[in-house]
Image 1: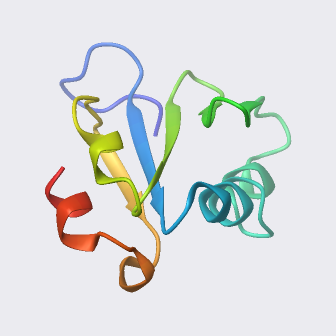
Image 2: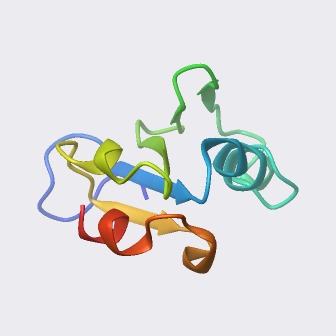
Length: 97
């Protein structure tokens, strides 16, 4: 989704995995990751060094780690994709943030 009902501007999506490397390798660059599943006509801009993916239409995805719960403190997101919570080093603290 690029926009959600009632939201002004593009949506922000948190992609949270056990580690930043897993978020990148599975959720973004993996066989069933966002880049692989994007339609051909979609243009996605991927900045791996920043952990930011911008999808066609403007939706922005930000990578986070279950090992660093404070990284989720502050930024606001409309949606979250949380991968394998059981592998997170700090699951409760990350989830609460």
